[in-house]
Length: 123
Image 1: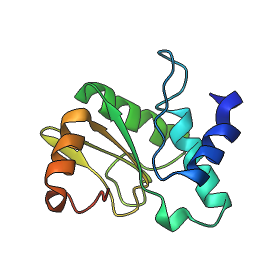
Image 2: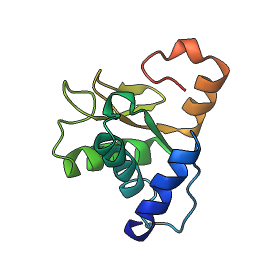
Image 3: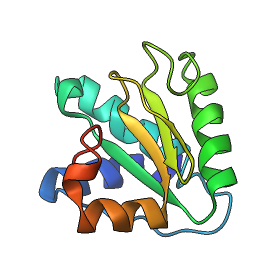
Image 4: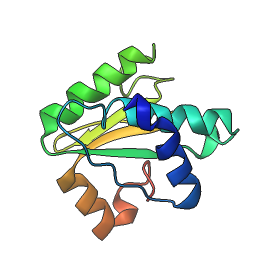
């Protein structure tokens, strides 16, 4: 993923939405989301950071959110000051400071159909 950091950030400069595809374990969920956040911080746009990462299973979304929070030396998801959160069926841990949110595909679809139900993560 590190080799594509510049390409991902340049793609985001040209488009609001970027879909990243790659092999299992290549860093799509953990590294790319952090590259994007770091790029936004460097550009002075950290206040607008709203990075949503989908996962097929709730366990994956929760464990990845906890892992990325740990890698960033951030409090656990949902805790005050945490820049990482998650939203899955029956469990939602998103602080006011969350900039990277992991969710299941089902939660994303619900947010697209009824955006007002989930005000903490805007699309």
